[in-house]
Length: 460
Image (cartoon, rainbow, N blue to C red; front, top):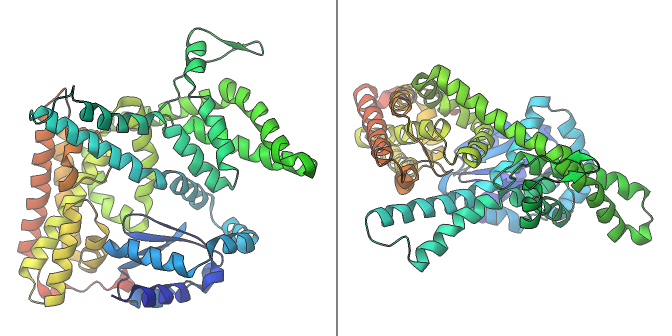
């Protein structure tokens, strides 16, 4: 595969170098922030070999599947994104101003939370594997290596506010290290101890809140800091700006963070978690079944990213999540089962290859190759995934399956369902995995026919 040639084709059809404000990647997609959307040629992008799909929703998302890293690296080599950010800043802001409030909010959420997922997922899966090894007696929980590696997950979530400070400051275009200094103050052990014992600031009692593993207090603090920093920079003498702006910004922000911003952010996170749990209690397993069934459409439009803040916030509060990730187990593995059925039944060599490869990716929790390469191109396969996912969602909701890692569920990280206090939880996860795989496989095998491939890309 000539990645350089394809990268140049992608750049050309998104409007050229000057039309790219910034570029990010996730597990399967290139995520472009575009200066002028009218210059993007979506039809030509879809026709480029290797492109599985194109989504213009908040960001221009180009689905590349398992080769996304190679494409990303080649495009980064070609582009001078720092120069584009400087030259295209005003134009990009003007373009973003045309977006609806909903798209702006979703874009803001994605920009903050998407970069957090690899660190959270890696640390979480490592911890779950260690728990499994300990449960099987392969390694002792008292072993030095176990203790050290296990602490990686604890550190990741304890210092999650610091990571949020970095991603929020990136989105705001403010000084990252000043943002880290501000949010880091909320995590200082001496400050935590002082506030827990009762602390008065400017005549007001400071709310006793533990900010480790919290995301919303950090977001509000950095948002306020960023706005304040820009306004102080306008009135500061240039000769002292380098220290005067951060000094004054921090001196004003930190007291307000303890008195107002932090407590409000903490309560917002609590309300979000409580609200989702309320829906879970009212809808029960039916709610998870519905969520698992509609996930193909949410992922296709990128709307599933809006669930990440909830999952992270809930995990930070409860230490587990029992709605979005269990539903994702049903959807991900249903995609895999359906693809394997297509690979088995198809007589077309190319379809067999695509379906088999996509089925393996989905089995590991990466569903975009399956979604864009097979599922959305065929109605009966899509229906099979919806039904298989919904059946699995109903089961895992009924048994109360809990996820202890924030990652896309798949075969490689089934250990995310290990609960040291409830061995049945892991068994429920395995059963859910089997139900999703077999149900979608059998339904697709029965109802899908080679000539049923009737839904073209342009109809998606």
